[in-house]
Length: 467
Image (cartoon, rainbow, N blue to C red; front, side, top):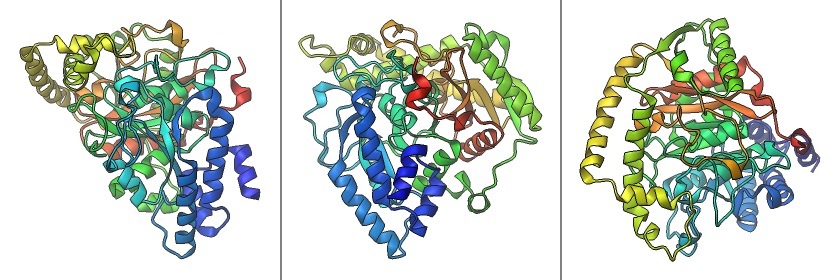
């Protein structure tokens, strides 16, 4: 247990390091899982990240992983590693509430694709995390099941971001090293930004959403959250079998991709109007980092306004949300979050003509945006317009998704990585985004950026947020 006490003091090591320690016998999966469960027990009464904790099953799975690894049958980088799932991901025999008390009795009869894939890779599922009701919200509020607390808020209940609120908090507070989230309009990337972790939204469909409670079948995407881009890349590569997402040679050598010669797009001043000043400064510093590393920067000119992108995205998302949940929202006797019900009801009032027009416009915008990207490898934006705010004062009609939601509408891939802190020490996120199916490149650029910055090394501790 010497290593377990070390971990307790220092937090989870990198995914690569944990794999090396498991295979060498320096620690066991039981050690890692027990630490995760201890950390959850210590912190979750306040953080409220977890809906359910599967302690008995997790320890049995960890013991099985240890036996397999000792027998020389190592399944890969996720083998024996504790992970948590957002509570819209089906686990056979468990309810998937999707953040709603209305679904509390709906028990899944089969695993979601992502659940099955994690188990096939030997991961240890320790529980499921809280989320915004029906995944429809970016601030992280949940009126009836409770909102997780952003660890960086100290005594204040700051927004953790949504809708993958509990998944981001669980990583930020060091309760688990990896979590699964979902992202329909920034729901992995915004929580990652506000909680100071890394959150990757792949191209839609790269991680199947089969067995995930839907919000918008057109825009839903399964993503991953971790402390670093290296861990996110290795997790994604393992789950998909895509060696390009973390090339074996780089994994073996520990090398990180270079930013030299990279063609990088950035937003002009008009697109940054209204941005929180500290985020504006951090964004400028991030662009300077890319220049200093030899990247070629070019202003990205969007084919339309962010307002139109928001309107088209909302039309599709809310129409499809109403198709799934409109019957529940229409019944006023049922308890539903006051920030969620009006949006679903608004979706039910969208005409079929407007919905079809939005889908057609989406296809056109995807083509126009591809032309705007030209020969750019990636483009950079702030992840959100603001850092975390007191949850009771947020404006649910004005979510912090201005820059990130276009990733779902335009079927891009994107990752939020840490790029600074505001004047109150709250995390700031940088979005690195790329074309459809450019997942490996985006992950490589994120690793390259983190190799020459240190914001991702900043860990939350109880002492660090004692404001």
